Structure formats: structure tokens, C-alpha cells
Image 1 (tube, rainbow, N blue to C red):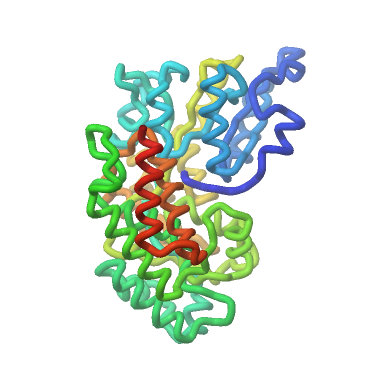
Image 2 (cartoon, helix red, strand yellow; image 1 turned 90 degrees about the horizontal axis):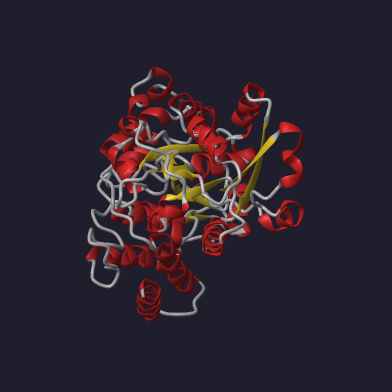
Length: 416
């Protein structure tokens, strides 16, 4: 789950250290498990249930911004201290953690048959050790504001919206240009270039890496084609120019500053968190062209933790089928366990916040059609580098070609 919510860890660090060294709380037979995450994994109610069933366990969750969280985890692994008992890892960073798999507890292979095969394989080390239980997968759709579409004179019915761009992203841009002609004041068609790019490249058979772990950003035509499409959208003034995961981006949800956003299942949680006053105004349409994935996460157990077995037990429980099913209907996080997809409580689920959109059908269909893209060790960092390149264009600091050349150079430096 590439959920970049910026509950900043800095203040928490001052109080707790954001790690597992909470010796004082381990007195009296109580074991404190520190869970370090990014964004909202929707675990608060599940923690309460677990603590009631395990009176000797106390759970403390610490959340940080997406990039900060993964940078801190890499630092803690390198220095041998500071990591939580459980650490969330996004799909974009799981290959990087897999490279240092010896620093994580082996979770075993007993649950292999439960998971989508590609999801399970992505967190397996070369010697066959499992370092992470999958929490969710992204899938792809487009979340859109019905009220803004209506004010711009566009059809707001989800079937009509889905049909309007069914054949691909070019049609999405055509709808965007129509929207922008009569756009309500202070709004744009989509949030920002980085998020749109992630969705477009997420549909490509090959992304930033080839299967042999070679970075192919400069040579894979799909990477440049996705760049060109997003630049075209920016130059048509369809972007609200908000940087994903920034406070301004979060405010953009609350203030209704954009009409559409590329929407993996986990984005529904983000929208609900940030736009609480917009229930019923949002809806969910099919993604242009169909298929694709963006994000999805894992729970890992670093070996430097003090309570490895207790952490493994909690991670296994939080990611068990029953809990993943609850997290979909309560938070919108799409399970990574395919046996759940045809269960009535999942497949038939409609979300009232999103105008009773049949999100169970939309996202389980997307998950079944999903063709996984290989993720290399620096996928998450490359994603951020490309986003930064698009931001330079949005801010008028560079032309498209200048920014592309710098982006390729920055990626090559990352890959060394």
C-alpha cells in the first residue's frame, strides 16, 4: 500500500524513539510491540481485538511519511538498531529489503498457498526465505468527484464515465480537456503528475527494471511513453500541480481541488481520511485501458527486534484472511489472498462514501486481471525521482526534455 500519509514521526521519535527499545514498558510481564508504518493501514480496531485476546501484549503504532519511513528503515537495518518489532514495507521497496533479507526473520512457507503467487514471490529471498506477509494489493481504478463533473457539464454516472475513457489514457485526457473548459473555479482535472504517472506505468508489462534486475528507465519505451502522456496532460493545464504525499496534496482532497485521481484500492482510505466532508460526492470508475497495479504492502519482522516470535505472531494475525477481509470492508484495502475475492461480503460490497459504488466488484475484477510488473531494488526511489522530474515541469523550472534528461541521469546515479 503506497499510502503516503504524513503523520510525521519526528514528534513521536522524541517521545518513543519510534523503535523497539521500549524497555520500560516491558516490565510486569507485558510485551510492547512497536509497529512502524506509513499511512493508514487500518489496524487500530484490530489492535484492540488482539490485545483483548492477548492481555500480555501492548501494541504501539508509529506512522511516518512514505519516503521518510523507508529511508529510516534502511538506516536502521544498516546501523543494526532502531527498527520496530514490525515494519511495513511498500511494494516499491520490498525488493530493496529482499536484498538484505538476512536482517529479517524468516516467516516460513506455510502460508504460500494462500497468497497471489506473484505477491508471495516478491518478498522471497534468493535462498527461499519469506521476509514479509502481504497485506494488500493495489489494483487500479479512477476515483472522481461526481459533483465537480456535473458542474463542469460532464456525465457523472459511473458507467458513462468508465465508458468515456475505456479505450485508454488518451481518452482520459480528452475528458480532462472538456472538464477544464467549464471547470469549477479553483479545480483541475487531476491531482498531480506523479500520481498519474504511477498509474500509467503500472499498466506496462515492464516498468523500471527488466527481469534480470537491470534498470531500463532510459531504454524501455513504455517509461518514456508514460512520461510523454503525463507531460501532455500537464501542458494542457489539467493538473492541480500537487505533490503526492505533501500536506498540500492532503489539503487538496479536503478542499476539492481536483476532480479525478488514479485510485488503487488503498487510495479510498486516503480519500476518506482527508475528505471527510465529501461523503457521497466521490465515485469510482474503471481505469482507462483496464488492468494494472500501483502499490500494496507487506509486514516484516526485523531480526534486531526484542520480541521476534511475538512480532511474527501479530504480523501473521493481522494479515490472516479474516483480518484482510475486515480491512477491505472497513478501510478499502484490497486483500492479497485471492480466495476472498468471490466471497459475498467482498465481491458484493458497495461503499456508501463512494456513492455506493460496487468497489468489491471493481477491485476484485482488477485484481484478477492484474499482470504483475517486476520490481527491482530501487523501484521506490526511481518512482520518486520520476515524480520529482514531473514536478519540475509543473513548476515551470525545466522543459520536458531538460527534465527527462536530468531524470535519466538521476536514475543512473541511483542504480550505481
